[in-house]
Image 1: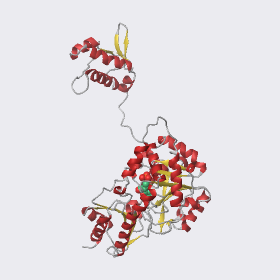
Image 2 (image 1 turned 180 degrees about the vertical axis):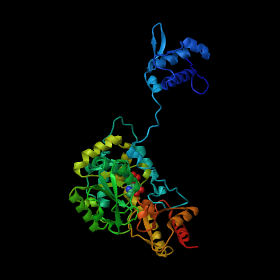
Image 3 (image 1 turned 30 degrees about the vertical axis):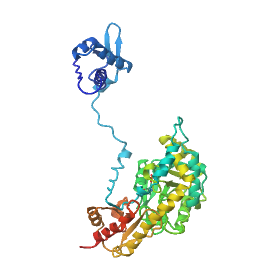
Image 4 (image 1 turned 120 degrees about the vertical axis):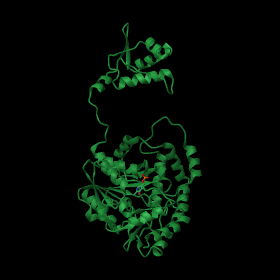
Length: 469
Ligand SMILES: Cc1ncc(COP(=O)(O)O)c(C=O)c1O
């Protein structure tokens, strides 16, 4: 037997002998039934104490790699090694065909000095001191697993909060706490969608959710969005689930009209389909009267309402929730348990206290004023320096709006020139699954991440990058 053991490198000597013998067995250099040198002989060859080798052998025997036979010596006991050695080499592990068909993830647009990317709140507005205090108070060791639906005080606090702020009809029992909106939608899809089922999404729309549905084997159908929201007449009749962002369409920013809302609810009832209402950022409002959520208009139990604290607090907290019709609750709770059992209880307790002590309301009021000022700056720029080429798509909530081109503009060129001028933003084409069929060109403008003082300069740079030279 040609057994080479090196004692160079870090780690204690027993450990190195153990690892090298184990590796030789695992990759078939030492086969089942083969005799290893007596510990005394190996110790002599390696110039180490016999105990050093004996301890390594003991560990290998204890782990089942070696076995001693009285009077005959020590032999390889692990059977896998012989099998590995005989088989033809196989390729690396690969994801399932369904997963591979998803293709690579969308490359993230990198940030810049002037950050107009959408979906990012202002981290400097996060109430860090209050959160630290509440989290510190909530951190206590608990040996047990928790309820997959979430901490009861948080579920009640969320139900009260969305009842007041969004007129969602829910009690704590109806709320399931999730790791962000993304997990809420994942749980709903797991529970409702058979592989091969059709799911309708808005086109343009929120790509991470489109990929989520595809990853579960759904046939994802993009449905156009007009000035009133998703065009209900174009939803495929076979769709089992329709995913929409009615309060603030992602990325166009429009609110679904009341008429369209009731058409969508009628459609879902008629086709026995579910609606996922993703209300991800409408707590920031720039007009008096928000439209009723689909959830509160729904009388047929078709709507699952999804919310998140990613925009009101921080995306990294991974705190979201869903409100589902009663019939789906046990399955959704089971799905959460299958996925990761439950979220992080300390953060959930901290958020419950944050809501109960009135801090969320206060935070939303003060942060809302900051975002309203930014929204105002964008409205003014759209009426002023940007008016020759763009019009602002009407939008009265959230942290972004869309600029639609009203004159010929080389949008990709504008994005490139802005990148060179240290401004990050994305063209509307990025939000289409089929960018070649885009009806109109434009830009999505996020005002969550950029400081208010920087926004006028960023918008001036946008005008300069659009102006023909
Ligand atoms: C349409 C939409 N839904 C949901 C979210 C938030 O997802 P999460 O709560 O998983 O962070 C975003 C964030 O950008 C979004 O744009």
